[in-house]
Image (cartoon, rainbow, N blue to C red):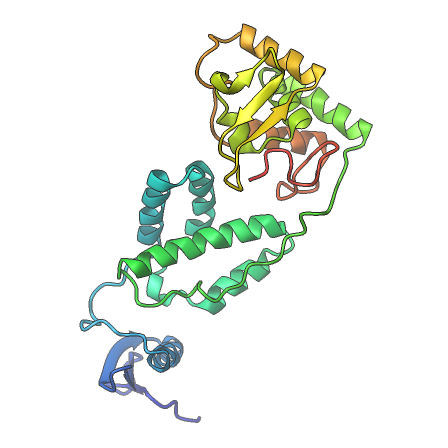
Length: 295
């Protein structure tokens, strides 16, 4: 069997393999790894890091942080700085399920790409991109805070999203979906009606307060939108009637809708109605794909 350069058993027959290499500063380094396969992989990674000029910590015996620790730090950042914290919180559960029990330094670009490819038939491009964006943020924050020396997600590419594709619900699909909501989630029917008739984003709709609703003029004022610009949404007669009914049942101040998080009932209703193939595809009526509570 061909001998692997830089990989050796310190005690022949022990099954405990070590690696030897030169770091970015030209210093000879040794590390105890364990299984031979892991040692071969790590020595190649260390050599790549050295070529890229990545600085190694002085104490290689220091415990490498788990990905779950990086995830917790990223969520703290999201909670303090991002309006999309709830979405990040939900997405992070997927990332932690995949990488949480691994040390951050052991996760490679190839691991991330393999995971994305394995789910390519289950996820929409938008879902893939949002999950990858959060993964990139998690590693970037850890790198900036010098918790890790290498960011494996940096070079993983986002995919282009086809935002111009339009899908319409048939009358039957819309009727079926509305019937399911009326039967099982009747208290949420006004939310569905407003989403269908205005095309507001999830954050826009559930962050809407009564002070930005003008029932006399039949308009909604959205101060902060995805592109950073404010805009007005004009309500048609049906939408205006729904908003007035919601107003009559509320105290008229504060949030229009009581929840400000992802409407889980909607995903369940979609499955029951059978109007979508998967939850990664967004259901909309006479609006571009992604218009109904899109991110």
